Amino acid sequence: MKLAFLMHGGVDRSGVNRVIPAFLWFLERLAKRHDVHVFCLDQEPEPGDWPLLGMHVHNTGPARGWRRRLFSGFAAEHRRAPFDVIHGFFGWGGTYGALLGWRHFLPVMFHAEGSEFVALDDIGYGMRCTARGRFELRIACAGARRVTVASKYQQSLAASLGIVAEHVTIGVALEDWPVIPPRPRNASHLARLLHVGDLRGVKDQRTLLAAANIMRDSGLSFHLDVAGFDTMRGELQQSVDSRSLGDMIHWHGHLDRRSLRALMEQADLLLVTSRHEAGPVVVLEAAIAGVPTVGTAVGHVSDWSPEAAVAIAAGDAAALARETMSLLMDEPRRLAVARAAQHRAVALNADFTAAVLERMSMEATAS
Image 1: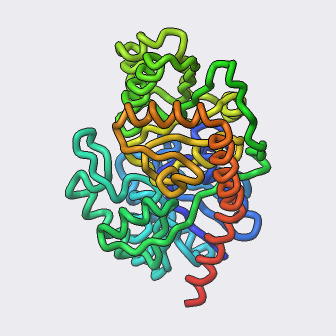
Image 2: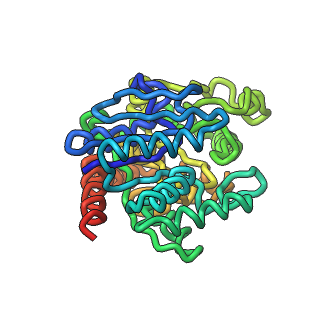
């Protein structure tokens, strides 16, 4: 089959920087069996094409005329050899995947992996915050033969809007992110807490800092590692809550995969404070590395709680602190949650994701 994937980015020609590893994992698998083409908007500022992991990347560039370049580039590739199926990822990919599908009479799969179904107006987050976003979401859904989401949590958000979506987890490649059995914690050592996510409003690190201060005031000895690109220009690091933690917190900034893995293997718990996550891959990565998660009831945290994760309400710093300390003080339970999470994450790995997308593509061409 010849498959087209529409993504905003995450497919840099280096294969290392500015990539979405979870997407590369299933794309690489599909490219071994099919002719895979990725059309992206702004991976690079200038239009260009390059090979990557067996696939073909077509970057339109975000400058004026990008729609014309997208449509003409897709049409030219379609003339060389017809596409069988279009897969649109996130809102942009879904909307323009639908338009291309209508134009070329091709089946379209819309994979809603982000903010498509939410409107957090106070921070301007979510496709449904604007009339344009809501209109583009309607186009994406109307033009899709099937809609998929990464978690049951996201599936319920879709259902609340009358959208029928299938649950397809975006999994982790076990050869790149190996399984390590959950490790017992030495209670005489500092608890190692980890948070991974870009510093921005939807990730709500302010709640993380507030919870950390509550835990410190409660007498918990811990070290909190925070990894993620800073979009807030040091605002969080300079906050009163951050400075009051002193050397109990370490802001790492963006980390490469090897450094992140090393940090994760030292962790006792992953903390998630996001106000929304469609299907946070970091929860899967932590589980595969033997680390359980305490976090807000979004994405996989919501799906897996209480057996394989511990979920709390978004913005509730007191609950995050309480549940974190409770799990740290109950080692049998912490290990049980870690094992249950690992079992689920291993089963839903990148091979599973690629196989489901392949099956869906074949079904679309047969119908």
